Image (cartoon, rainbow, N blue to C red):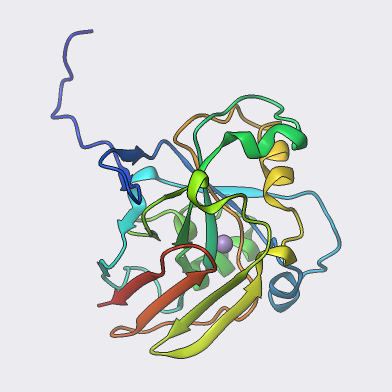
Length: 229
Ligand code: MN
């Protein structure tokens, strides 16, 4: 095969802090209900049921500082602040003890959610796909290499909206920590270099409106700045 029948698009990619090269984004997997207090606020028992996953398109990433237009087909848009793990290596059935070796680096991301559409999907037993995976649904900071940060296991994760606290938690409060998540997900699919994993959000999710200015923070990483327009 020597050519493509239509013009080829740009490879979705994120900047890497301190490097000229970019991090190519292959796929985006997200963990659902991975902080107990958030599971409770969404009406679920946070007992340690197996983790579950959904996905977003790779080209739904928005670079840090970018404006995000209020999406169509929702009147209840929720931002979920999350630690994002960028994989430099993949594989099947990655042991928990080896999982951190797959991490290239970390970023701060927003899992933007059309909550009203997701609610209908839950009620009707339909897929969540378009409530979670839509254009510009994954604003992200640059990737900070694990060689700079070390392995992140604890630290504050927060979201402010127009300067007011909205979400607050600690990475240590994850129900399934990052190595366990990589282990579990790699039993369902073959993870690949370039994959991102959104690791779930702490409590405090609520709607945002046009004009809101969001700042997401995880200790040790760059803050994420997003303006909803
Ligand atoms: Mn989420």
